[in-house]
Each structure stands twice: as structure tokens, then as C-alpha cells.
Image (tube, rainbow, N blue to C red; front, side):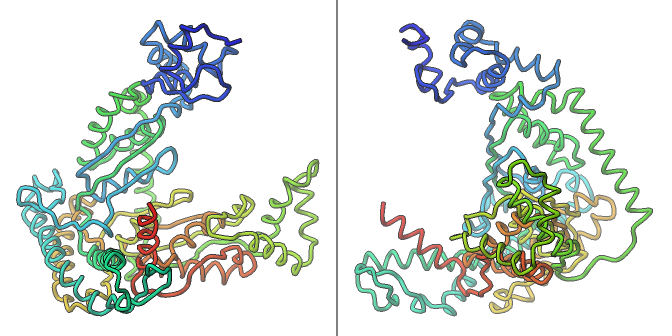
Length: 536
């Protein structure tokens, strides 16, 4: 017999996917009520649907009242994770979007691509870059605008020439496509019109990506992008506090705009981002920053590194790490025995047997999505990196690690893609970089953070990454796939080589690292995409 009457079931089915099963989805429209129901659920023996009928049905403000009490009075932050918000942010700079994407827990992001989308469009006759508010009030405004316009002009006018160069240099006739009979054939051997059109789509998409990859280095960090963000209330609240605390006007304005929109869906979850509690947090964040700046000024000296760098600067002795990893592998399957006792016994296992166990774990992986077990998190690596800013944007997407970065400057030189040289546009490229450097130096003296906006993707950028072996496997295998950008493929390959040199036994687990070089990186990926499209 059902717990609920016929009338109650009718009501419940508007708010839950079913009224009589043990497993059900919560579909009540208001996010605040969904989160409050989840949280209230843990504080009573009642079923969730019964809670809804008893407490929420007759009181439309029950959700808000619950969160006001739990969050504001009790300070139980974890319940804010039960509310989910989604926002689309359009027309923000590549400086601000990185600040938002720095948040690694509680968020998922989807950002406009510089590989699939050309950035040459204008709005009301103007290229899409941020007219940075602080700079616009200074004597540097005109030079800033001129430098950014020059970047976009040279980027835009070279899209077609770059595309032509790539297609002339690497003809469609060099590639094989799947014909109607299922066999791979050179393009000029395919007669079927439908297959030829499909093959052209594959080739055109791959070559366009190659062209835009090369030209993106010209874009300034002020270039406007779009990003979709999905996150829980707790994550959004912290993000808003960080943006409110920023010294950049753009980020302050974004904080106000994001909060205004989130107030329409998850207001109770983000209420504290700029109230008295939020302002205390903002002051704390700025105090940390100021203190670190003072320490750096009084204790650290040196000159900026010129050029690129991939350097493994921290890792433990391999035998020690292997012992820890093997002990962690065994631990779950050795009930009643402490980790310490397991570790002491593992230390006595001959090295050849240890190597064999690691190889056994490796052989169990059939593809790169078969991630190593958490035991491999016992090994850790710290890398010192200087790469072009465009490439950093790709690595920045990896959030299951520690990443610290510096301000974007022109101090470390720039990286010129080979395709730029091949097209014979070195002088134009250098003109852009020179223009940027001159304007940057002027602005940086008074406005070091605002000066970042004028810096091109081509300029080298310093950051450090600390990751465990499990994350290193994921990142390095993913970033060496054939369809990856050549810049980050090279860096990921160097990271693998550094780990392999330091830990030759343990690095066997990195089974799907691709060390090859490819001319048209996106080709095979576009083929797979087209095949899936044709099957629909």
C-alpha cells in the first residue's frame, strides 16, 4: 500500500519523478527548495516526499527560511553545495575568464574555442576586445587601443592566406578517407559525391583548426570570449568573493552581474558573497596577497627567464615512491593490516618483483580512459613551466592539481609559430609584439595588473604545476593525443620524458603517451566525428 493518498501522489508527481519508488529524481522547479529538501532530509527520519508535503507545500518560503537559518545562523557551508546554478557570461576578457576558471572545485566550464571559431568579427565596426576601464581613463588609452587593433587586423587579414598555405602545403590528396565500400582511399580515388563532400568537410575542418591555431598567438589577452559555468552554490559564493576582492574593474563588474543573475535562481546560496561576512573574506584574500608581495620584495631576487621552460623541480626517490604506491594498491585487499605494516613488508619485496607488479597494473589499462587506481596518487611531481599564454590556456583546464601563476607580461619573450614564418609574415608578427611591448612597459609601471590586457597569446608565461602520478597520466596522455595543439603536445611530451627519466619503473603506467609528430593534428579526430555524424 502506498504511503500517500491518491491526491498526494498527484501533487508529488509535479515535484518528483515518481511517488512510489525508492529511487526518484527531484524535479521541483525552485533550486532553493531542491537544496533545502536534500539538507532537511539528513535531519529527519521522514521520507523526502513526506517532508515536502508536510513542510514545503504550504509554505512557499520554506526553502529560503531553511537556508537563512542554516547558512547565516549556523554557518553550515556544506549545505550550499546542494543548490546548482548555471550562468552564461559573454564578452569577458581572457584575463577575467582565467580568474573564473582558476576555481577548481564545484564548477564545470565550457569556453569559446580559439581553434574552431575565428575571432575576426566586429561589433559596430570595432574588434571584440576589452576597452579596459582604468586604462581608458589614462593617457595610455589611445596606444592601448591601437596595439589591440593592430593585433586583430593582422590576425584577421591572414586567416585566408594561412588557410591557403596549409592546404597547398598539405593537399587533401595526401589523405585517405573511408569510401562507400568501407575501404580507406586517397581522395582523388573516391568517385561518390556524398563521400567526397563528407571528405571535404573533414579536411576543411582540420585545416581551418590548423590555421586558427597558428594565428591565435596574435590575439591579445583583452580579446573577448564567452564561457558557460555550472556550479554549486558554495563554489559560486567563493568565486563571487574573489571577484569582488579583485583590483580589476572588469572582475568587480562581473561579480555584481553574476550575483544579480544568480539571485534569480539560488539567491540564498550566494547571499554572503558581498555582505559583512563576504567583505571579511575579501579583506583576508587581499591581506594574503599583500603579505606575499612584501615577502617577495624583501626575500627574492633574480631576473625573468627568457624563452620557454619545462623543468621537473621536485620529486621523491623512486624506490620510496614505488613502495608507497604498491602499499596503497595492496591496502584495501589486506583487511586488518595497517598501512605501516604493509609498507614495511613491501620494502622487502625484490625490485624486479615490484617492477613486475607495476607492469601488471599497466597491462590492465586497455585505453587512456582506464585511469590508474588512486594508489598512484602517492607519487607527486612539481614542474616549473614557461610556455606561451595561448598554450597555458589549454593546460589551465586541468584542475585536479595545484597550479600557481604569475602576472602576464612581456618579460619572457614570445613564441613565433612555424606557420607564421612559412607564410612570410614574420615582420608583421614582430610588429605586433613590438607594439605590445612598448605599450605594456608604459602601462605596467603604474598599473601592473591592468597591463596584462594588452599582452598577446604569443608571449611566454610562467606558472608552476604540482600533480600526482594519477593526474599526470590523465593530463599527459590527453595532451599528447594526435588531435592536440602542437604547442601543448610538445610540452606534455617533455613532461613525460622528465618523469620517465626520474621514475623509469613507475612511469610505465603512462601507457598511452603519444610521442609522434603530426602535420594535420585534427585530421583523424575530424574523421571520427564525421563517421559518427553519418551514422545518425
